[in-house]
Image 1 (spheres, one colour):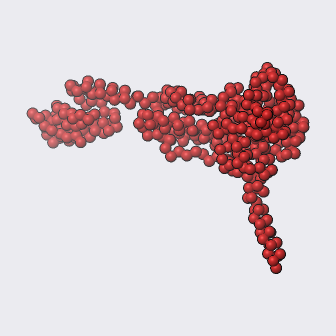
Image 2 (cartoon, rainbow, N blue to C red):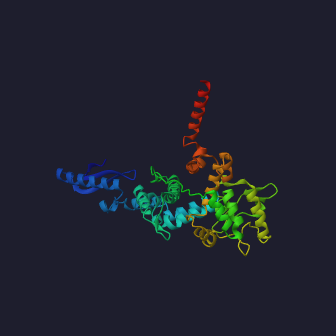
Image 3 (cartoon, rainbow, N blue to C red):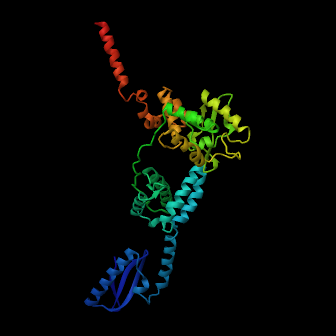
Length: 393
């Protein structure tokens, strides 16, 4: 706390600044009136030191310490500005994190950074970003529209955008020793995965009506549950016709062949007879012109957008079936397997799930007799008990 002293009849201001004791002689005579004036000035001085707005030369322009503290302030500012701008740190952070991610995830994060995070936070100093800024940004995402229908971003997409932002800020906070503003911000509650599988009858209609050159493609999709990126990136080197196995090791994302969606997605799928026959038919159609199982006229991999536009959606319209993504072929495989009574653990392995948890959470409502959530199993048990009791009477 600043104090007032006296020397040779003049008042002296005694205070601490930047951890240094400072004593400055004023031109004020030592009397009660001047002491009150100096006291008020020192109170203001201390307030400015606390706020970080104090300028030594403003109060003591003739002091020998003006230059000393100017230099110290410059050094202090230099230290403070070592915390970089969001865009500068994000560029470095992304380069360092790439080695941990698969190509497909690198692309997703890159799109989020470029389209959302840099425009919103690029020119801000990381340590100056506040929690309120993050909440306002998230709220603004809910107003973003996209696609022909101009639909709003779903909670799942907003969470995907916020995840890299959280990772960036938490990493920066650890490196530059400031408190992350992302503290206590939870993900938005996401709606359940939309599952609209085809019935076995609808699958039969599609496979008997679709173009002959695409019949093997959709047969394999419907009866293996492969993701679009997996079947489009499938190569003959990963097909073992002798053992009737499909080895999923790669995926095609935005025309680039890379790793599968997750490490658990690397798996071996067993072929049933329909799938095996479809591969034989495709091998005949392919006639060795490409390393890809399914290819375009030039031997390159398929573009799923063109396939959807020219084959998938036209066949659904022709048959009068509800429009839905081709990804529903994966959901169809899962529900057909479950309804047939296949072992859930085997199904999970076929789909590339590490556990059966997601299997039952996503598909259970389509197979009540398998999950036993309709009470039929318990009713059957009681009926059996009643029969046995009657037999003993």
